[in-house]
Image 1 (spheres, rainbow, N blue to C red):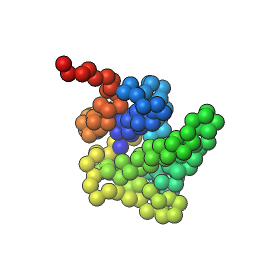
Image 2: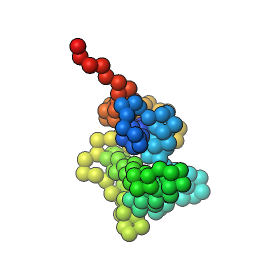
Image 3: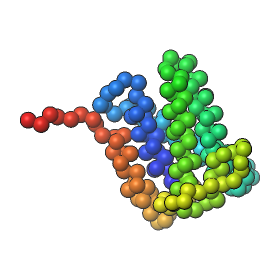
Image 4: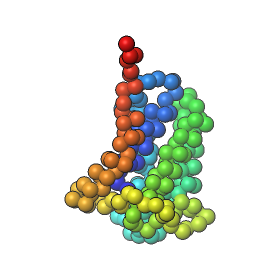
Length: 175
């Protein structure tokens, strides 16, 4: 999946995560942090430059797209939250869910080799039975006409999350 869907999930998570109930949208920094966290599993593409093949367990959509990886990131996030005097449990759970959403969303794409959701216990790559999201080209291929098609498709599919994340929240009472 291209980055738009993952970023939308992270931005919406930033709004839900807010420590104080507020109709105001979260800061751009908070949205950027949660969006980066939701995009984190795709850091595995760095391995291509080091000879890691797509289908390897540390290849694209392998270990970093698993529930175990999401749990490990959640534990680290909880430790950071404790250090910054935030709720460790809340932060850890949110981080785990945001990172886990990445692999789950990637199972909804129509290409690639599937996602190793249960790594390290099972190296099988899984797809969802319904795959409405076109697979995104990796790297500069995203700037191609097909990449633009993928971006527009994701923009349409994830527009409700983007709207939720970006809406002001201020309402005026009807008179």
